[in-house]
Amino acid sequence: DTGVSQDPRHKITKRGQNVTFRCDPISEHNRLYWYRQTLGQGPEFLTYFQNEAQLEKSRLLSDRFSAERPKGSFSTLEIQRTEQGDSAMYLCASSSLTSPYEQYFGPGTRLTVT
Amino acid sequence: AQSVTQPDIHITVSEGASLELRCNYSYGATPYLFWYVQSPGQGLQLLLKYFSGDTLVQGIKGFEAEFKRSQSSFNLRKPSVHWSDAAEYFCAVGAGQAGTALIFGKGTTLSVSS
Image (cartoon, rainbow over all chains, first blue to last red):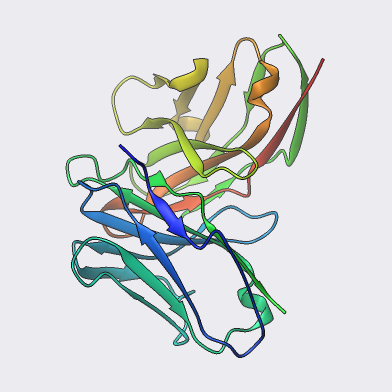
């Protein structure tokens, strides 16, 4: 079990640039989640996938954000036209259909927008 | 709306002393409740969970939590704290469709003094 992995671990970008993050879930997990965590706060839910279908999206997921999981395995989260307010830790988690509420988190991608 | 409150932002406990971290939730139905721990540079690790049944649940690393419906609480306890327990602790409730979107509290930072 290699756990949930995320790439890159750190990203620094200039305001207005686009960024893309990748998440590889635990291999047998069907569900994949994205959360955002800002300093001093708990993680906030963004969206989740069951296999390749995106089943729920938070109001936090503005039009500049898009997530995909094309083959039901890894997922990408893209932020277009980044803003300084997008600076945060982006966390990915996965869970199995048999234990959907037990979410296993990756180490996160820390985004800094300058 | 569902919410989670962790009243204590920062707690310091002496090594070997007992620990109790408080968590209150707001949720209309029977909640799914979780405690996660986050160490610097690490992802969130699930300590324990409550879905139903026995209101006292045991988790990893010697932690336990008690669900009290009348108080809308799910406090985390440990009888003897070790220096390695210093970390940030998050309480969460499962919400959204089928309880899959976790709503987290703001976290409690635990420091352990020698």
